[in-house]
Length: 108
Image (cartoon, rainbow, N blue to C red):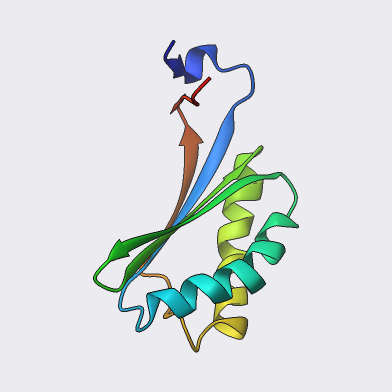
């Protein structure tokens, strides 16, 4: 069954942060896992987090929240937190966005 916004029992909201020019993706991934994941997962409304290596020094962060306001707030908080704590391995995010998840499916 395809789940769409019209029949989703509980709406979810995602933030996406794209990083370009990451000099050492393996080191960045380790720092994200050890430092950033505990931070982002402590934020209000957090449900899921994904850190994706796109290759070529590009990386993508996807976080899912229960409320849009929490997702938007998380992007702003993450921007400052990464600058203060991970600037040695991550440049500033080239793109930050947040929006409603309108289709979602998980394996049974």
